[in-house]
Length: 180
Image (tube, rainbow, N blue to C red):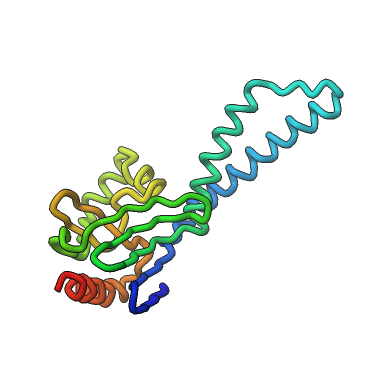
């Protein structure tokens, strides 16, 4: 976790929580698909016809999607950037970034996300797939819940249990300073 406090802005950068199983699956899938693609290219070069099968385009498309997910799990991070009366929430994997800008005046509350263990385990064992999809796109996986007038989103997935309350008070203090 990195905190950068300057007179113009206040920035918090938190790497995502490491999901080791997904890191292995997506990283291994990326390597496997890249090897298959390279072998297709070499086969075309060695045959001297350089016939490029149409299936290779689909393989390339799948490779890019899996590479993106592998990058999220290995290098992903979230940033909260306070500038003037704006809060920017940036999720990045060093290649692609998703940025959402919210006015600080629209923020109604910041709460610690309460996980219901019964719901988590029942969803996991019943196999509805929500957790697997959620991990892949960081959907509702943050430690803190930021409520605005129009939406509710979770932020800062990579916070440790010991950092959650400290980070909550730090962000609330910054919101209060920017609103006054």
